[in-house]
Structures are given as C-alpha cells and as structure tokens.
Picture (cartoon, rainbow over the protein chains, first blue to last red):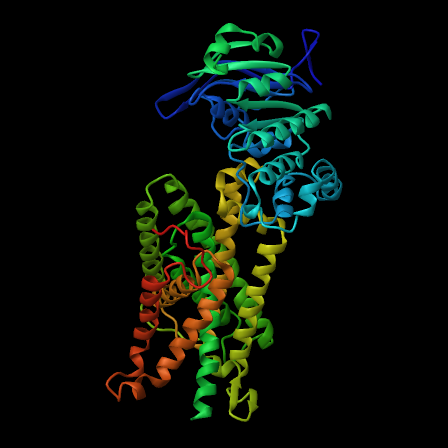
Length: 243
Length: 315
C-alpha cells in the first residue's frame, strides 16, 4: 500500500470530480473516500447523481475534470476493464443479470478477468455464502425470482474478488424481507474484509450498517460524516428519512 | 414419383443450404451483437470467392495444380477466411464504429455504401467478366458416391462437410468458450458486459472477424460447386443468407443453420418443380420467387423467425 503524509492512502478517492452528460453538469466537485475494508453509503434522492458517481468510479462515464484514485494509483484515464483488474466490482442497479445465460455462466462472467485456475475456488466461496445459488447453477438467470437474482448478482460481483464492491440500489424492487436479507449479506461480505460503497435511497437501513455516509443532492456532496451521526442529523431526517 | 430427381434436388438443396447457413450465421452474429444489418456481408462472400480464385491460379490453376488437391482446397478456404476476416474488421472499424451512437438508419446507409464500394473495387480490379474455378478439371465429376439413385460428386460432399464442420466449430466457440460467453453477454446487455470487465470493442471486432471469415469460406465453397463468380454475385447470396437468418430467427445460431438449410431446399425444389406446378408458365429462373415468398410469409406471420424470441427489436 502506498503511503502519503504518513497516513495510509484510502482504497478509493474521488478528487474534485466533475462529470457531464453532454451539456448537463451532473457531478459537481465531488470529493469522496472509501478506506480499506470500510462500508460507506452514498445517499440521495432521484437524479442526485448517485449512479453517475458509480459510473465515474467504474469508468463507464469519464469525468471532465478531477481524479479517480484507486489504491494510490490514478485510474482516471483507465478503461473499465483495467479498473476492475485493480480490484473493483459492481452489483448494478436492477442487477442486470444475463438472462438467457445460466447462473453458472453469469458467475463465470463475473470472474472474466480472473485467472482460470482460481475459478473453482472462487465458485466454492460464492456457493458457501449463497448455498441457494449453487442449487440453481444450471438454471437460466432470467427465470429466477427477484431475491435469487439479487444473490446471483452479488455472487457474480464477488467472483472478481474485489477489494471494493460497488452496489447500486441493492434494495430496489425487493420485498422488505428480502431487503433485510440483502443487507445481512452486505454485512457478511463486509466482515470478510471487502470494502463497500453502497448507493441507496433507503437511508435508514443503509446507515444502520454503514461506517460512514455521504449525501448527494443535485450532484453535490451536501453532507458527510459517521453513519451514527448522520442517522441523527436533523436535515437528513427531514429530507430522506421522512420523519 | 421420380426418385432420382428428388434425391438429386435434395442433395442440391442441402449443398446450397449449407452455404446459405454460413452466410446467415455471419448476418445473425453481427445483428445479435450490434443490432445492425450488415448489408455488405454478401460482398464479403464475393471477395472470399475471388481470394479463393486467386490462390487457385497462383498454385497452378485447376488443370495443373502444383500441390495435392486437398492441400489446394484447404489453402483456398483458409486464405479466403483470413482475408475476409480482416476485411470485416476493417469494415467495422471505419464504417460502423464511428456511427455506433448515431441513429440506426445511419449505419444501415453506411453498410449500403460499403457494399457498393467493395463491388466497384472488385469491378475495377478484375473487370465484369465471369470467372470460373473450373472445378471439373480439379476433381473429376465421376468421383463421389454412387449408390442407387444417390449420385453425389465428392466436391459437394466436401462443401457440405466443411460447412457443417465450421458451424459445429462456431457452436462450440459460442457455447463453450470464454470468448463465446463474452459474445453472448455483450449481445444481451453491452453495458452490463462492460461492467464485468469485458472489452466490448474487442468482442465486437472478433465477432466481425469470425462472421466475415465464415462468409469468405462460403465464397470459396460457392465457387467450387456453383460455377462462375463475378463482382455482383454477393448481392444474391447476401440476400438469401439474410432471408435464411430472418426465417430461422435473427440473432439465433441454430436458427441461422436451420433457416439456411430450409431456404436451400426451398430453392432447389422450386428449381426442380416450378415448371411442372405452373404448367410451364414459369421456368426455373423464377425459383427466387418462392424463396422470397417464404421471407414475406415469415415477415407477416412469424416475424421473430422459427427460433427467435418475440421481443426482438427490428430496424
């Protein structure tokens, strides 16, 4: 790990990131950090720039200015594949499984950039976390229920052995019981030493398990701090927790 | 029933159909991954036919080949596959990739432009004359299977067998390999595929290479068993390959194979029987009428094709 000013460099750092879609200024001077093994949540309403932040981190959308630094390395100009190789993975919004392919094939695609020799071990690790997925491995992903798809999507991301796992709205479209289950799994993954950046509209649940949080509003970070403080924060409660 | 005739038409249809299937596969693969109708695909086949003809001439010609016939045939097919593969990659790079974010009519027109460009380039280089592989000098027409009503020239068997082998190879590539998985993932959801670390551009380039190489091989096979070649031949084969892809279900690999065989058989049997059925009013030259009636019928009644899913988007 590289060291700056004596302090350990964070796993991920966004520095003054500005992202545009054409003429539209989406992200405005966003600064954000995720430390090694940290669970950070990124909150905000619709069109606040949460998904764009993830796309900028992943390199799907290039920022017009600012830097994306991954484990001390400036990856701003790197392709998505190169960033994933350096320890990123994502559970995209709505899971985006490859429906006409089997569960096993979906998992194998998650390990696309991993050496073939590790495949078996990685599969066993994922099956251990999700025994249910193991039972469904020959089934087409598109035929699974929403909850099962969520597990496959997480398993697929874990196949990349990420140091930092990005999650885009894991609770979206899931029944409340499955949301709870989903966050249990997030906790489990986190306790295995993987850092997570979780984008959520559901502030209550995500803050209850996160270490720290950021709140985005129209493309700017308007609040940040420890999750335990944010959850008590008056403005946040009014704006997002509806109380 | 005239069994000799039926068997002969069956063999003709299967030979023709295996070539159409190869062409349809290229159409289908490119459509599956880019939702683009590669209208220049037939012209790639034509270039393949010319590359094969060039290799044949370079190695002494049909009357006096300087290597064993099977080596000659292998070299002709491989050269056409390599040449057309790279041609396909160049077409993607310069005619389609710059238009990937453009409205869908733009790459379609670009494809039409590429088609004219290739046709006229070959016209300029080789003239408008028909050329022949003179395959009867290469392999005597009597060599082959003679079994009751079944009389099949060995070159036809070679054509069917190699087309079948290539389709089998493609099937294994697509269903069993890492590249195949990446191709299917990219075809289904390009952005999600990129999120897995798949280099989508590279997958598209490889798809074009493989599809065009199959067309190149088909060009040589056509030259070997269906007589002469010229700069305009690609149009007809392209159109029939496209018909086969649509009938089978565009984007589907088994569909392309099945559609190819079906169209081949339909064409062969209409060549054989259209005169009888219409009491001599239509000659065998009207066989295409039947082929394209099948296309229209499918467009109207089952636009997704035999193996296609119902939600396939159309141009």
